[in-house]
Amino acid sequence: MEVRVRYAPSPTGLQHIGGVRTALYNYFFARSQGGKFILRIEDTDRERYSDESLQDLYDTLDWLGIKWDEGPVVGGPCGPYIQSERLEIYQKYARKLVEDGKAYYCYCTPERLEKLRQEQQASKSRYQGYDRHCASLSEEERRAAEEAGIKPVIRLRVPTEGKTTFHDVLMGDITRKNSDVSPDPVLLKSDGYPTYHLANVIDDHLMGITHIMRAQEWIPSGPLHILLYEAFGWQPPVYCHLPMVCGKDGQKLSKRHGDTAVRDFRAKGYLPEAILNYVTLVGWSLDGSREFFTREELEKCFVLENIHVSSGTFDYKKLDWFNGQYIRQKSDEEIISLITPYLQSAGFVSQEPDEEEKARLALLAPLLRERMKVLSDAVPLSAFLFEDRPVTDKSVYIAKGMDEAQTRMALERGSAIIIANERAGVSFADSETEIKALAEEMGIKVNGIFQPVRVAITNSTVSLPLHDSIRLLGLEETEKRIERAKALFNN
Ligand code: GLU
Ligand code: ZN
Image (cartoon, rainbow, N blue to C red):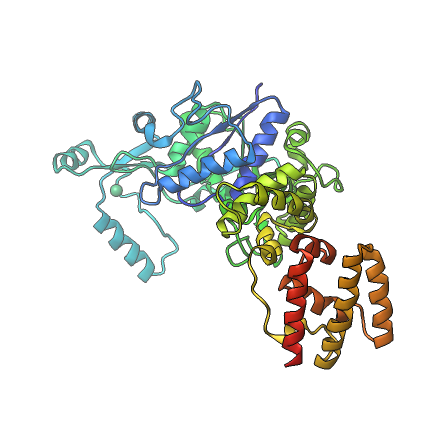
């Protein structure tokens, strides 16, 4: 049997880490099994739908290099793959359930339902939800309601007795009493739109889905879906509800923890390889130790059984580390083309870089590659070259454990060594040896010397290696900045 899985997002917001992980697991599972990965757009909630979200979905999958075998744009034998284009299908199947006595028309007005809700709340009744008022309308009552022009909804007849069980690959059997399933949920709304449950079940069946991999938050819908499959007389697919993605505090990952939208990670300069690799590891592992996987490798070795049962922790620091590792693997040319847009939007490089700018980028690229965690780090790390914003706050120059007088001395003597050696073309290792000796003589740490020199030259405490910064800046400009810092301390 061919494996057929789907990613079925609702375009009601930006693609976030959790959603993308669901997409990746489905995609990798399909690929590793030689099956099909289907993209289905669940856009029946028209109030929350947005074009921007749909575009963001396409952009995100595209950026990650995830191609769907069937779905919007590419089409396929079970289309259309956008639910709002399938309304007639849902209507037909909902009517079929009514004909078979598994569902019924409900003519209750919103006012009646609201009143019911308030009464139930006030009486603190154990029974909450629809009271099955229309479950047994007579033919006359029905006709009268139709003639009064009331547009009905269609509700599923949920059995009041018994239990429903479904099996989940990771969680085992999950059983609910039918009396705990929401009483007679709406399947088709009065405007002819299906609810999530109806459309989801019909589509999974008609699209031949064999495995459902989706977020654990959908587990409560499981019994209802099983009841729907039973009502239709269909075989449910295999379920595999995915563990949650949590922040370090064990709470579901949310904006409180940091960025969650993939678009924001992308904007900051995370590489798709790093996101794809790291996100896959949040809740899955091959052997518990291997960390690096390319997309192609995961397409071969992803196994369902290795998905963790407990929730996964999304560690922003770990992602930074992965990203740094992937950045270091890039060639000079790749780095140049990756950082150029960031430097352009900072106004450091022109839209059509000239030869001089290109030469500078070529010098910068290998240095930045070793230092960046994210591509946007290129901006602060190279700012000293493109603009000159001297640090006028003395405390920034003063390293831990140092005072102002010591720092003035360290700046003066340290920079004299470095400049003299740079001018003489002596290797920077020699400068470092001399600086070490000076630090010893002064009874301070080397950073007490390097920090003020670094801030003087690069206008920042975090920078490219000092020697490289001087080389990029030129000796003349370097000396000018040193003199300026010395002046600051001599005032
Ligand atoms: N449209 C649902 C969502 O946005 C799909 C849930 C499912 O995969 O069944 O998550
Ligand atoms: Zn009713």
